[in-house]
Image (cartoon, rainbow, N blue to C red; front, top):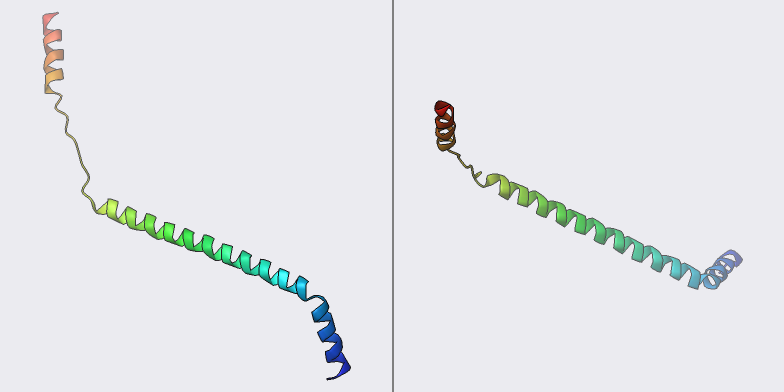
Length: 80
């Protein structure tokens, strides 16, 4: 081995713990970012599917018959 390779190996060996710790932290951060993105993607897909399901359901409508109130008001107005 050339002296340059020997020196490089010694530097790597001296900093090996620091390098390993840095790589481990980067690995954990990468895993967390991927997990957050996966949860966001699953949530978005679920929400989209729910909206599609809700939009496909028929809308319930209610009809109000105001004839009784109109008749009552008319009877009040005619008595005066």
